[in-house]
Length: 436
Ligand code: SF4
Image (cartoon, rainbow, N blue to C red):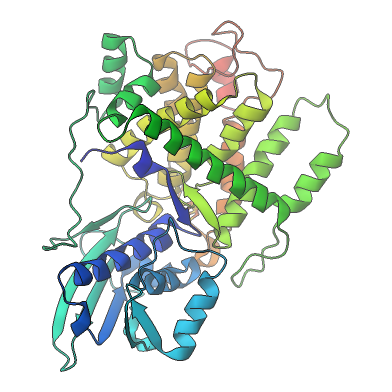
């Protein structure tokens, strides 16, 4: 399977990439197949079953709402987050659902079953969709798995809704850190340049740059909204949103000489994104929704708190982060349901550390070290969201992981001649700093 940076960074909807974005994509894919094969006019009923982690914690993650919107043809990238709740309420109160936005069928609460104690064999996040005609015969049945980061795969579906793994050949293929470093040594290219060359298999340089900068714009808008929105997060925990209050405090603070000031802002950026995510807002899956705050927070730090911030640096940052994320996706997992929070927050933390290292002057070897150190300190982190909501501990976990990847202002990297925070285990004080 070939993975693009745009697979790892996609514009989506909160609160969960595997439990919200994935189910919406799967439901949309299912009705897309009905439409493409000309079966949609025959359909009079749809039933969906969610299994395993989706069945157990799907209500807290909005999986049920995501399925309804996906069946109506909505995508995570384009669904209007401001009207999503009211649309779902309308479907439930009217008992009518518009499949692919075209064919209206009856909908009943019993048509969506959440299996709390039953899992499908391939992955904890399984879904089965069935469409029926008027006599009640099955028109189509498909099973999909949401495998983390919004990625959806099918079991063995045949037909036009089949999800075929991308096997596009790339210029510098790599699936391990050793292969990636070997390419940088052979070509003299940076990690981001290797990734950029591979991206050219799908897009022009201009499209790559524009696409990544629009990802960055969505991240910035998310931080801005998060910093301006107070109140309480949805769900039964009544968790207060804190980013807006912290934002006001930091603006008012007279602490320009405080060397830890930048870290407070990094915390703020991450809190803002993850509170937006927890409330079902528009976020960038980076590489998951549960960990969506870390990379935007470190990018904001890069742009606002270091002398290295520029559009070029943002593009290189995201490409480097993508190269590192690809390694986790290929060799381990970025799914919290599958490998715990080390797969979400750990991967994001590692991607951010390596990317910040490259754009602040690190060599490919230092990038690899930074990414490895960051992951090391997340190994063993379990997925343990209170009440199944992506709120506690997820939001603060992002803030802490983002802070650990941003060197406090005033720290200068002695390993790379005056650049900031190019962490390496082979030189001091970088190793100690990276571990605090
Ligand atoms: S604990 Fe970690 S892996 Fe689990 S939902 Fe929260 S962010 Fe995701």
